[in-house]
Length: 285
Length: 289
Image 1 (tube, helix red, strand yellow):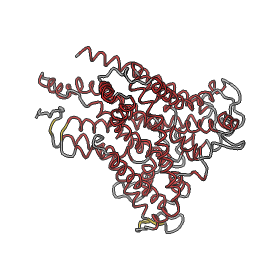
Image 2: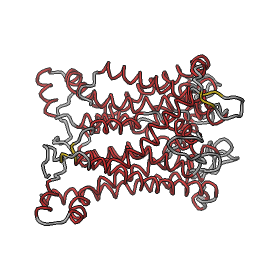
Image 3: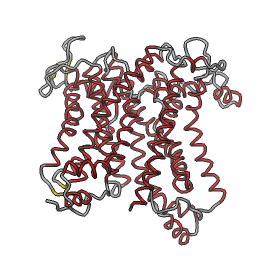
Image 4: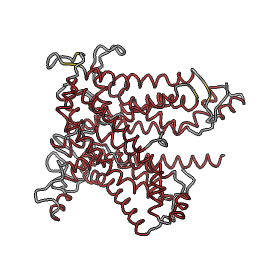
């Protein structure tokens, strides 16, 4: 964080200040309004197939959260895709970040620029272009007609995660004292030992943050996945989209609430852990 | 060999490329190369309705894309621009309060901004459909007060689509503005107040200019996905609010008219790029890069 204490006492104009606070408060209410509705409607007992109008309170949905088999299967598939895509994207992206942070070389700037491009391309263009790639049977580069499905989804997810990982890890690594490696080597540590004992512990928090981000992006992605999933492979968002035309069972809300609360716990634990680590590091230096 | 520059980077010619190789090869195969296949597809033609498209410099696809779907293009960019503006109006005070008045609750407040987005994009949009629904409290209230007529609705209107777009991409506006504001030294504001004497002028002359990189980044991060979105228009709009994303999606996945769909995506990407460049040029981006 910056050197500032984070509080500006002299930003005067009492009424103006109250108005800004009010605007910020309303902003937060706006952010949470749909979340409140999602959680509330997980306790609804809808009449008919759509869980869109409040009827009466029930615990049934929470007592039977896995009632909709297809939805649960879709969620499992999403978790599987996210796990595989995250591992591969994290490895590839971390290598890219390490190269950029540790070495000064011709073309480094160009690589930085190329990394940002996928993040600025509209998702619909990414999805559409991947679909044309997978459709084309006689490719010069990949002489293989991809059947749309699990593999193409994973490939697409790795693609949009690699840049995020590379940039996140890079941002976290900037300002690290790489001469520590030289010190370890000077003291006689072989390169592998130096990497395992010095480099890896230093870069781990950044890598973990990037992996979590990839996982979240992958599990949430709809637009790109919709283009490359084909007719028979259904991830969680694809299932919700396909189903929402004919039904929205309250179990959607239950599972969404579970994911929400799970993520909050992960975030809270991660923040606490990070703070403790930072304090320890500060004490150590 | 252990020579390092001021940032601690080693000078090397080959070893970085070993690390870069796999990742960059992947990006080349699945990001850059598909853009080429998309371009190729956009110049292909279909010998018959269900035959595979063949490449053949078919520029008609582009004129078709422009002449048939001009209104969807316009609508996408107008909606996205309005959503970006609304997001800016909502995000700025929020980022401001977190950065300058958050104190030790800063991280918690930032967490609160992100937490809603741990639920799936589609489920959030469906929740808005419930909130704005014809039998919902919001419409009921607005009808009672007389803002909406007795049969007035919010769903299936441009307003609902723009509101949904604003909501779904809001954190992308809050976070960059927060990062820019957080970097500002509070003493600078004190100094400005001493010199300008008026809080509003100090805000205008110091805080606003220094937060521009955040506003720039945030606007692009909202505008680009909003312009290409089709989910909000699908759930919250009707046929009269369909955006270019809806057309691309329909042409690709329902009509399977790949050449025209590819041409539409290409034109869309080109327009986005032009808008981004003009926008960067107007705002001046020396300090952003």
